[in-house]
Image (cartoon, rainbow, N blue to C red; front, side):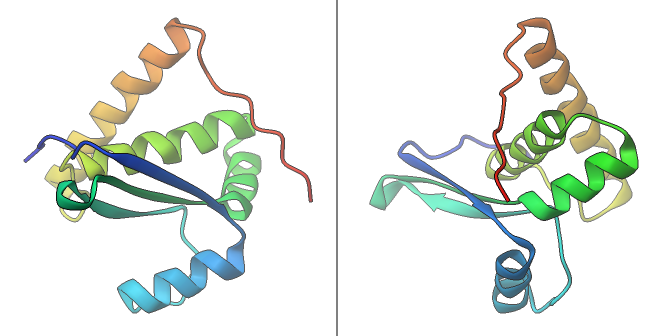
Length: 122
């Protein structure tokens, strides 16, 4: 069930594959690469949350899906933000709700012509 995101600082970390795999292992007991990992915030500490984005995963995925890299990374940020807002994707029903909200938000970003540009240096 969606909820309010705590007020406070939002941390966004852009990570390579090695770093996202380590976090995935440390916190979710899964050593495989993933696109985004989100940590809930704590209003008592003025922290909205943290969104960890795998740039390497985004690069590979954008190539496979034939989408611009900035779109792929924006999708990961929206996905992480939705997790902070209480959306989940563990069941098919939850996945469907999250995908619909992702699409709605991405469409709003496109319409407003506010799709961010990311300069990736390797």
